[in-house]
Amino acid sequence: MKKQFLAITFLLSGFAASAQKVPYTNCDKCWLADSLGNHRVVLTFNGTGKVAKAVINWRRRDNEPENKRIIIEDAKTKQKITNVKIGAVNRESGELYFEPTSGKGTYFVYYMPYKNEGRSNYPKGVYLKPENTASAEWLSAVNGKQAPLASVKEFQSIDAFNSFYPMEVIATNAETEALLSKHKSEAFLVFPEDRMNSIRMTKDLPQRWIELGPQNKYTGEAARGENFAFQQGIYALKDIENVQVTFSDLKSVTGKVIPASALFCINTGGTTYDAKPLTKVVNVAKGDIQALWCGVDVPAAVLPSVYTGKATVSINGKPAKTIALSVKVNSKISKDGGVSEPYKMTRLGWLNSTMAQQNTVIAPYTPLEISGNTISLLGRKVEVNKDGFPKQIQTYFTPEMTEYAATPNNLLTEGIHFHFINAAGKKINLKSQGVQFTKKEAGTVQWIAISANDSLQMDVTASLEFDGFMAYTVKVKALQDVSLKDVTMHIPFKKDFAKYMMGLGQKGGYRPENFEWKWDVAYKNQDGAWIGNVNGGLQYSLRDEKYVSSAEY
Image (cartoon, rainbow, N blue to C red; front, side, top):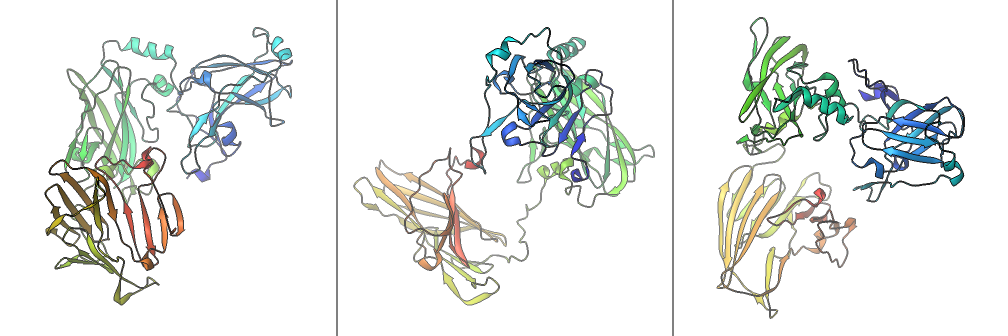
């Protein structure tokens, strides 16, 4: 959809806003964001002289704007202006003085330039610090009272993705205080909001909400069969606890019904990943904003009409608020629930999904089969040793990966195993008690094994799924005081199936003859590797009981 718009897209809303007359636009690829940032103000100067003044009511959500560099550019020459003086700057507005090098005309103010101090795949943007490039002679000529004003023509973003409008344009302190003074007796206010205007700020009210004011109604439009989403913005005027949202049926004038069970709020309840009921407690501190994402699973068979009902927002110990809901269901039918249009937040319903709970085998995979301690799956076999680890892994895939061979290829020279080395450097041997299969299903097989001696016990819990994913939990327990020098996991690959390697910092290619690696969670996005050949190999991931993906750091 976005490709159909012109390069500069105006984002003005339909309501009258006396305090907001400057348009917010997107100017796709109009400048280099890597050097100038993602945002700029377009100024028009019609005065004369060597000094121009601009007062920009930019309503910024970022903290400490006075500590970020401001770059002013001459639109005619595309040159950076060096004679710049920064006056009073805060989140609401900024006062600037600059030399209008081309006289009357257009000038650009880039107010959030940054540089990337990270990598291309894990960028780390750092805002540039203020600089002083003005000459002493020019600075001496700056007189704030006499400098002619440049007017603000528009606020621009490098693209729609980076736009602050409308939900990240903050209300001023004066506007917020005026709102509070009108609602002194209330514990919270509700601002229903469309799904296309995601509530993004938790500490600042959007200017949009000041203009619209708190509302007791929401109107939206959905297709039949669509997972339709909307928001309830909660602004806490006091500390509030246990925010709950309940819904009535939605009814048309002819008596047709969308049942209350089709409406939901993902913040307060739903379904866990393993299909169990989920209830969450939502508390909101005074002055904070909480977005409540709600939705309607519109039945595909419902007749087009306007369906009305209500949402009730309640908290502990204070009166509830009722929001009138009006959803126009049009004649369109959304065959996929709307998931093909994710920008409409139609995939929120996935959070309550109960799919794949039956562990059904998905074609072309085949059901798991067990013969003794050997598990067969599509094109492969895994023989489980008495200690619970794979004794052998076999693949029947040909090098072309188009058919199966009659004779399998073994990936291991011996079973995968652990080495326990004591303080004296000697190996500690454990005696295995054998494998016990605890689940035998078409999609998953699970087993346990215990190995021990008088000082150590190793408990192994493992599972194999129909697609070849194997998970192990290994717990080592000291039965008496013991000093260990090392604990090693040994995966003895056959050389033919250890030709290539990728992971642990290694780019895909031939496996190095020797390789050393150490954990560095804070700086390395690595916890496993793939080692193998064209038609056989193992990908492994190493995790402990406190594992957090290093990609989250």
